Length: 223
Image (cartoon, rainbow, N blue to C red):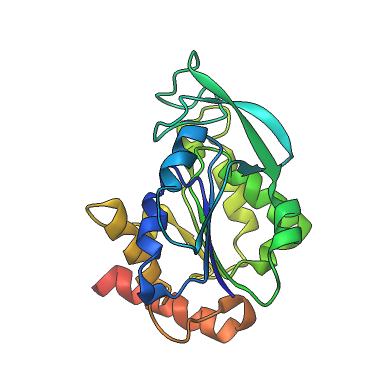
């Protein structure tokens, strides 16, 4: 099964893009802990879209999310531009546990992490548990840069990810290029070959990962 996991789905901006038949996703799973945002995603009339009213994190718990519903809503009160006087109690599920119960080894998994600072905890948990090996392609937005108490985490997580080649691991600053969110998302999917049949699967083929890396270098320098 071809699965898109949208972690930090907000109001479904990414889900609406990946519904395009060119990407051939069988399931699009939206993780969104803010209830008002979930209601907006549920307006998408497509049976492939499933809305889960919780976020992924390093543990299963309930936590306050500050500035809920905004583009920078975060569980970290020192997030830049966050209003720590406005919050919503939200539910979070440990990422590795959810993956273990819901993601199969034979699935082709695309993962988008744009979760305002929780991305490093999620990646660390998936790596430590071995569940990261189920991910074929991931794009990570390091919002920890905007959080003084967490900004050091980007370097630490990138160090752990060094053994994974492009296109299995992509960073937003490199691949999310374009004038709109839709254009940025489509650019990432194009660069990793999501619009081609069959899609390259780097975790199952080091050789394909190598050629994808060469394609990335060529695109950055000559496109």
